[in-house]
Image (spheres, rainbow, N blue to C red):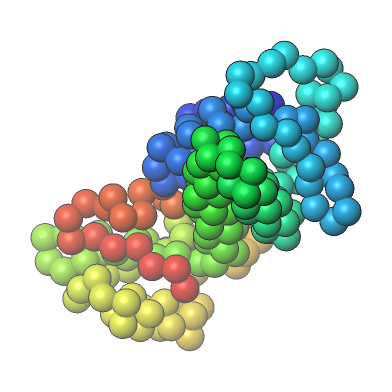
Length: 212
């Protein structure tokens, strides 16, 4: 019920900055089923070898995975259930199983952090500062599109925040109704922000991106 994809699809989450933990999680979850809701948490069984599930179990698993990936509280409850399962397996001297749970905890902790960080990114404006022949050029991003460009002396947070504050005071950018009417679909806006987010930390030398 889980897969890693390079393209945004229906019921997809991300992007993730780094494929490794995502790939390991997808592989490991093939051994953890069926998932079920149980007393404010989740129940599951660990299988040494993946087995084929019936359609009903598959749909239940898919529904729960969407819940865990799309809700911070659900992800935290799932992590606590994995921790209990790891301790139980270790107490029963099933050390290989406990190690699998440990690895799942590490990878799901990473996924939870990445998904939370991206959701936080979507709620904020951003400024990308890129080096030019004389100084830096700033690109102000809001709701997907670049709504204003300007120039500055450097790429420091202080300089970028001064630029953003100046633009806010002078109100030089178009009203929200104008830039949201640009010929860009809702999916395109999300994809654009996903591309920007995916390149944080991989910008060209001397460039920087700040969330405001």
